[in-house]
Length: 135
Image (cartoon, rainbow, N blue to C red; front, side, top):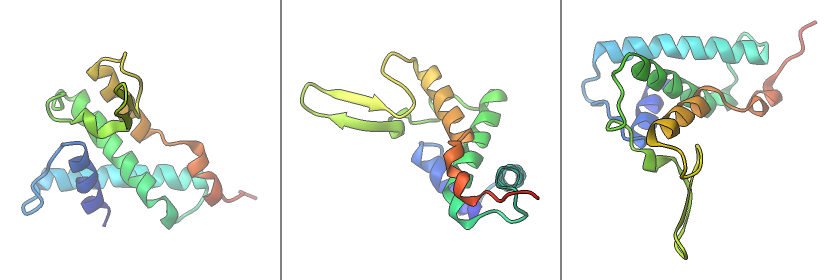
């Protein structure tokens, strides 16, 4: 189920929703975002059904939309998100940490914005194998 995967992905970034009693507003909000993202994927692929192979892409896009909305409304702060979860590589000798969303020169706010943007806008190459030609 997409909502379960969205909650798990949010938890991987340190944004926790109590799974035993999800607030109805969370379920409603995520359902709207799921429909929005599914329509975008169908449009990108020119299909009437969302391809099963794009499930993880869909989850990331929904998470990106969710975080974007929360940040836009002022309900998301850097304290809510663990940016350490966005680490791409760590090297112990001479300590080299590379973030998925940018180098160490970015402020935490810029890294959060870059993370949200990368979640919301996946690479077009993800959609290419599922595209259908419109006649």
